[in-house]
Length: 308
Length: 220
Image 1 (cartoon, rainbow over the protein chains, first blue to last red):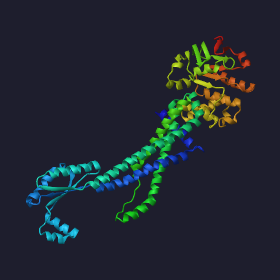
Image 2 (cartoon, each protein chain N blue to C red):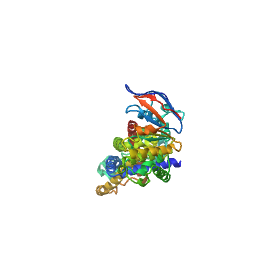
Image 3 (tube, rainbow over the protein chains, first blue to last red):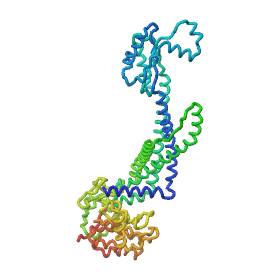
Image 4 (cartoon, chains in turn purple, cyan):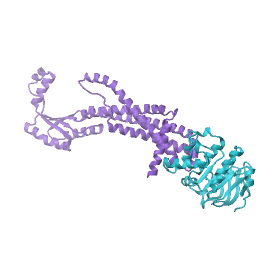
């Protein structure tokens, strides 16, 4: 175990020595990889900021259940139980509000200013109704469940019309889904770019250290011993580039937030983009180091075989 | 200790070694003679498993190195001290670091490696140059530094391929004396050379010509 740790310490020191060697080009490679990583990191930051907002918007889709016109009040009130049963899962019902026809008329009067027209009708044209707010609906697939519940409610006796407004939920969810897919595609593409850059960097390192590799083999170094410094170089390149990319995104948020704050004020909102959380940032550093390690692994396996 | 059984090596149409059979006992000092292209270097490469035989066997301590898996080769080479014609010192580090390398490869601590590397350099008379850059040394000093690197791991066998080529008489004698000193403590030494003066004094000389064994010398 101690020998193993000693080998790792030696490999790390060799990798660091190469990194800090003048004209190693490490800084330039970090910049190239950081630029490639900054784009998906920025996209993820945006998505992480928008997601809670969209969840808040989509949390309670509404279904309006209109009872038949001639239904007595006591029966209309009693219909609440059958509506709850029709929804199925009790936790899906965030709120079920009975709206008496008189209250609905008053609201219509108040909102639309159609007092004259309603007075002309002579009687209240509105039925008793329920407003059902559903909980825990966050994406397009779940919005489909809203439609299913509406269809179930329509089959209830004494229910005349069911009006569901889930289109906006679907649109928002679909937009977020597209954003997520776009981000995933961008991340995958740029991940390949990162691996390619590290692959080439390590290839050059292997070639410049050809003598050392050959001599190490002659004196009894195992392949693992020879490869390890290159693995560390790749992982360190990924780590430094990941940290640089996170820094760039955090810095870019400052001027961006100024403009967003001004825009959000128009909608009486205090929305602003926050940097990624510490665990998310740590995860991205692990991913970028992993990409660096992967590039180094592929490069070393390919080019070391040629030297032997 | 080292046995060759009907060993042949071909590079395409060219036969570098043909049906070589001989054995070398533990602790022997053997000189390998023959003109350029005789197959001396190929024989060394076979022992160190840098090349695989086309046919036949090379046994080192009873192990067929031609059939040894790649994972076993580093452990074979740790028991061999290789001194090549081109000294192959690493130019990006000082002499001491070059000599420490075989020890660090085996997992020795830096302190232990440095101590043993200094002892090896002292044996070849180069301790004063421990912190020198390889390029600042003369050809003979560089070759002695290579010997220090070859013996620092206390190998059982030293393989020296033309270690005195390109050296003047004085430096050549120093290099050979350094190698012979390890033979004195029981290390098996195999040295290839063109040097007639050296061969004249040798107890056992193996002669190769165009890849064939002409004379296996007299085993003690």
